[in-house]
Every structure is written in C-alpha cells, then in structure tokens.
Length: 456
Ligand code: FAD
Image 1 (cartoon, helix red, strand yellow):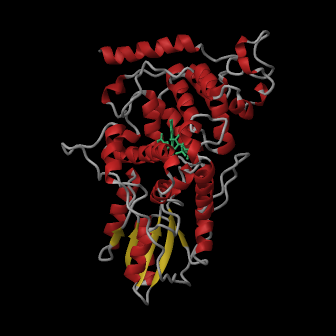
Image 2 (cartoon, helix red, strand yellow):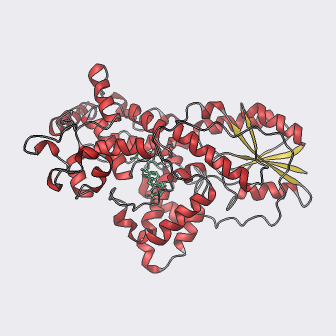
Image 3 (cartoon, protein in one colour):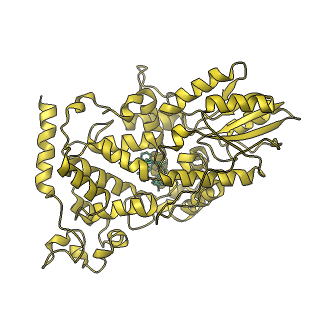
C-alpha cells in the first residue's frame, strides 16, 4: 500500500516518528508519498524571511527525497483528499500541530479525508502541548513548576532512521514557491543538515559557556537554532539526548539550555489551553491597560521599528532584526520593553512587527515573549522592573561590541559614551538621533498607568 507523509513543522528525515509510522503503514512492499502543501492562509501572512527559509527547507527535502517531494498549493482540506485519490494512499501521516490555526485545519482535513485516517505521531515539542497538568488537573500558568514536571517526566529518545524507505515517484508536483526578495537581510542556511551543523558547532564550541554567554549579545553565545526548531529541521529530542550525553563539566550549561527548550514547550502549552492569548492579554485584568495611539505614537513606532530611538541598544536590536531577521534574546526583551513601557505602545503592535520580520517567528513564543515583557502574560516580570536601556547596554554589552556592529554611527564613540551618546560633549555623533523620549520620565508614566489598572 501507499502511505502519505504530510510535512508541516517537521521538515527533516532524521528523528521523525511520523515518517516511521508512514513507513510502517506502507509495509514491506509499499511506498511513501512525501508532500508539502503551500497553504495560502499560512503563506500569505508569513513575512519574507520565513517564506524564504521555508523555501530553503523544501529545496533540501526535495533533494533528500531524490526529487520525490510533492508540492501542492491550496487548501489542505481539498488538496490532500485529491492526492489520496490520485495515489490510492491508505493513510495520511503527520506530526501533530498544536497551533491555533493548525488544529482547526487538521480537524477540517480529517473530515474531508472521510474513511482514510489522518494519523498523528509525535509533535514539534519535547513534551506535546496539553500533556502536563498540575496536580489539581488544571493547566500550568507559571514556568517553574511546569519545568519541574517536564524534567521529571523527561523526553523520549530520538527515533531511529527507517530500515527501508521507498518514496513514491511519478506523482505530479508543483515547483518550489517563488524566491523572496529579502533586500539586504541575510538568513542562516536552511535545511536539515544546516540545522544539525549549527547544533554541532554550538554543542562543541559554545555550550560549555552558555550559562553566561547567552546574555551577551556581542558574542555568539547561543545556538541560533530557533528557525530550525520553528520549521522542525531539528527536533528538541535530538538536542536534549545529545546534550545530556555530554560529560559532567557541561551539566550546568546543559541544564540551562534544556531550560530554554522548556520555555518553548511551556509557551506552546499555554497557547494550546488558551488560544485566545495569541491576541488577548493572558491576564484579563490587563485588558484595561492604557496604550497610546495616534500620530505621535505612530512616529514613535516608526522610530522604534527603524532603529532610530537614540537608545543604542534598542536601535542595534531593531537593526539586527532587519539585518538578520533575528534578534538576540536579551535584546528582544529590551526592545520589547522599550516599545511597551517607554513608548506606551500596545505589545500586539510590536509582536506583529516581530512576527513579520523574524525568521524564527513563532506564534506561541513570540506572543508570549511579548506578553511576558509587557507584564500582561504568564509569570510576568514584576511590572515595576522596567528595563533601563542604558543600564542593560552597559551591563550586557559593556564595550559596545554589539551596538557598534549594528549602529555604524556609533563605531568611533568611546566606550563610556557608547550606551548614552547624548552625554557626549557636543551631543551624539553626526547622523545619530537624540533620545526620542526620556527613559526616567516614561518609566514613571508606565508605572502610573499600571497602578491605575492594579489599583482599580
Ligand atoms: P538559544 O538560547 O540557543 O535557545 C535554544 C532554543 O530554546 C531556542 O532556539 C528556542 O527554540 C528556545 N528558547 C530560548 N529562549 C526562549 C524563550 N524565551 N521562549 C521560548 N523559547 C525559547 N523565540 C522564537 O523561537 N520565536 C519567536 O517568535 C520569538 N519571539 C520572541 C519575542 C520576544 C519579545 C522575546 C523576549 C523572546 C522571543 N523568543 C522567540 C524567544 C527567544 O528570544 C528566541 O527563541 C532566542 O533568542 C533564539 O535564539 P537561539 O536559538 O540562539 O536561542
């Protein structure tokens, strides 16, 4: 028989339980049809970096399957039943999609397939969303207890490669989706081997120093695996297994790194239980928070988006976003805090902008990363701890390496001024703006607005 393997956020062949299930279903004489559906409802709203990275992953899969990958565009609830008829497939295999749209789409596909089963095996997560509950049977709302239970449960071992795998050939396919014009944005290489290479480099050269190195945006201290995890060219299971097999020396760093993978699972779990939190504050009380809109807010937003707020670390972060479709985690927190608490702009506007421009843009991690910073989300940072962009820069980028890399106007500024160039005798260097707002004043405004919500 023939089995269909529908790829979504699992664009790899290694450590792939749904592929094994498809091979099993096909049996010793059967073939597997690998298919990717370009769904306009996901493709259209994706920013160009994500489209281009996805395109690269598909090119890689096509090569890895010896050209057997079938690409079809359209509504999966129409495309898949057609393909099942054409190939006489007996089952359709997927890794579960926990996303808000993905769940609804899968239900529609399942109905449209009728008698032919849609078989879910595995998920893009270490522990699939919805699996872990508190003792009282309710979902976790706070990271630390979720992480404790996650660690106690552990993750499965990586799946082996199938012994025998014959791809169906001769099935009609469309071309890869069109290449995207990225302007000057440089993306990391896409595809499974690129993901594994990035992982190996990190494991062998950076993991040991991760606990501290992860906080300094001027050095490449983190794995840069987020886009690969987003598209499933690597699975967290592979990473956890290999990291935990390292020696005692790395135990602390591995613990920290696994802790970050748990954040990813945690946010996916939160979104699974509360899908409306992709748009609404997780904390309902925070719906009353007052944000600015109108021409001044629009000007402020533009200054933020274009990296010309006059606060070097904020501007460097937003320019990194345009340069690499990626921002270092510490700086994501700083620029998000600046938008919400210094410019008083709704986190949703910033989240949308990130989502359009990030190559790793992921609904759960992005919306909840923003909500965490905005103080509207799970486990919020105490609202009064407003990130001070100058202090953050001085602490985590003390010699200005990161700022100088992304803000050429500041390249020759002495270290002591690099995070507060407005204090230079004669003001900031030519071409670099004065601060758009005064941080100390806006912090007071943010706190007062917060008090108005909490005090009411
Ligand atoms: P590493 O430090 O090497 O971490 C390894 C992996 O763990 C990451 O690839 C990621 O999958 C996961 N991870 C690490 N930190 C977090 C976190 N705080 N939350 C969830 N998962 C995490 N991450 C995304 O993948 N997509 C997003 O759209 C996204 N938007 C964010 C928006 C804001 C405002 C903030 C504060 C954070 C956001 N993050 C997002 C989380 C984090 O910034 C990135 O995952 C991380 O910077 C990616 O770099 P890395 O792969 O080198 O991370």
